[in-house]
Length: 218
Image 1 (cartoon, rainbow, N blue to C red):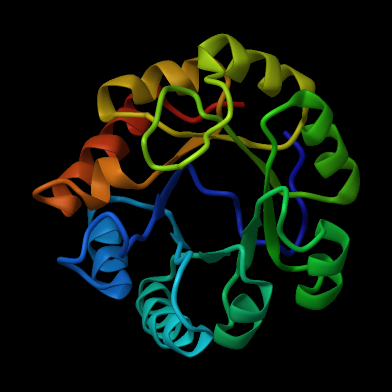
Image 2 (cartoon, rainbow, N blue to C red; image 1 turned 60 degrees about the vertical axis):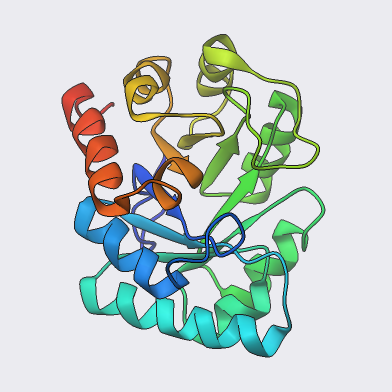
C-alpha cells in the first residue's frame, strides 16, 4: 500500500468527535476517552455553530491530541485545520477541492476524501489523497441523506481499486469491525457507536481489540 514520506501514518481506528448526537462530553473530552481506549486518529467533526466556537473546541481537542501524540484531522474545515495546527483534514465531495486544500496545508498534511464510488476514489487518488473514506458500509442514521449502503462487497471492490488506505465508515459496530477489515479496509471511522455509548473509552477499546485481533494488513 502506497505511503507518502514525511506524513504521519493513516491510522486504523479513526474516532469522530461529536457534539450533536451527544452533549455529555466536549470534543476534547471525547477525544481523550477515545485515545485512552485505543484510537490512533481523532477526527474533529462539528457541522454547526459559529467559526469562533468551532475554533475554541478545535484548539482544545488539538491540545489533547498533541499531548498524546495522536494525529488530529479536521472534518470539512481547512481553515480550522490550519489555525489549530492539525495534522490534516477529511474532505467530503462538496468541501474544498483536494488540490486547494493541499496547496494551503502543504505536502506533509494528511488529506482524506470521502468517495462513495470507485470513480470518485480514483479521482481522489490521482489528486494526491492519502486515504479514502468509504461508505456507508452498513445502514446509518448519522446522516440525513446517506448514500446507498455499500456492504462488504463494496469494501472489497474499493480496496482492490486503489492503492491507498480505505477507511470504512457508517453503521460499523465492534462486532462488525473485523469483517470490514477482512474485506479489505485498512481501518474504520467510528462516531456514534463510541460517542453515544455509556462508556466511550470502553467502546473505543472494543474496536481497538477487534482491529488487533485481525492483525495488520499488508
